[in-house]
Image 1: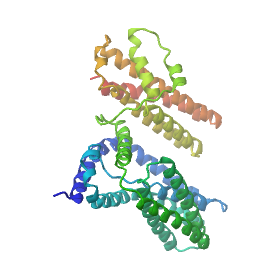
Image 2: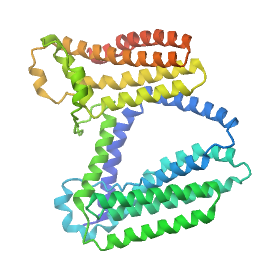
Image 3: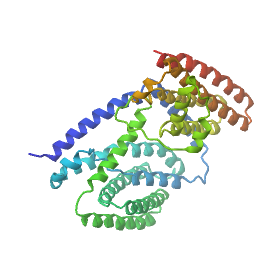
Image 4: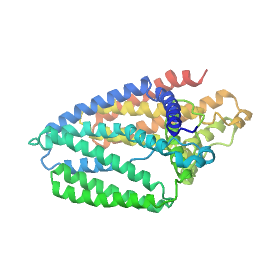
Amino acid sequence: MFNAHDLFKQRFSAHMKETSRYLRYIFNGHIAFAMLFLISALAYYYQQWLAALPENFPTAVIIGITFGLLVSYSPARTLLKEPDLVFLIAAEHKMGPYFRDALIYSFVVQLYLVLLAGAAFGPLYAATYPDRAGSVYLWTLVVVLIFKAWNLLATWWMLKIREPGVRQVDQAARTLLNVVIFYFAVRGEMLWAAVTTVLFAFVFLYDWRVSVKQPGIVWDLLVEKDRGRMQTFYRLANMFTDVPHLKNQVKRRDWLVTLVKRVPFTRTHTFDYLYRISFVRSADYLGMYARLLIIGGLFIYFVPNMWLQLLFALLFLYMSSFQMVTLYYHHRTVMWLDLYPVSLDVRQRSLVKLLYSLASIQTVLYTILFVVMQEWIGALAMIAIGVLFIFAFVRGYVYRKIMV
């Protein structure tokens, strides 16, 4: 006897086992220490910044946009797999309990973002509106959770529509209304918040009317959405450990390839070429390196204390270099590389050279940033820290990691 509720419990158990295994590698000692340091520093400066908060600071705009985006982004996780396109379609009329459980799971698993944002904006709200009772902000968070549930239902209904343009227009309309609603709610203009809520209700009911007119579930779309989210998680986990389920994505990026592929056409530079091309064209490494580089630069620019600026520079230099070590295992499933008439020592030295280059580029850019800020001592210290880190990290960690 087919039981959709039991099927979801089995899928959920397997999914939690799969994700928890990789989460242990993601939140290892290195990342946990870096996150603890980052959160502590942010909390300290956040508290100091609130003490001198400008009177005209756009608190309502920032909180409204953040809450609006958080409730609008409400993907439905169904945990469906490709074989379900064959084996479960016949039982579609019995899948109601399965999809009900999937929506409940989707709502619960996304609550952490709302709670984190609510906790982060609580002190800002209290500093901007000191005359309001604390319960007002708590009720605002309750409304955020209600809108989160409504948007999740609307997203689920629109997944019965195959045309992506229709779904995108609906998503854009709901996002705009959500942002405006919470902007007015934070400002205390409840009349306008009620008016925009009525407009949102019309969109919500329209989504429901459209969905009930559809003949059935678009199974391939649900499978595609869920597979895409798991691949995103696998790409993140692949930065820390081997992920056999990962399907590597490659992008052309011709102009960048032209810049990095100029290496001598000799045997000893085989892996120099391969690692450079992999770094540029992979969907993981270049984006991760650029994001960490930019975020680290923003911290250096906005943190007022020079020594903390140097600590943040060292932290992001470490995080970038640590993530790039996994390039060594990027082609582990390609057996043709074992046929190359190239020694293992050449392969290892090629990775070391790339790590030297990437860390040196990051050090130079951060040094230039210190120079632009006219912090000459910080620029000299950045050079010294960068050189010492590159030598210590490569010699002390990378060599022990790959040269076994």
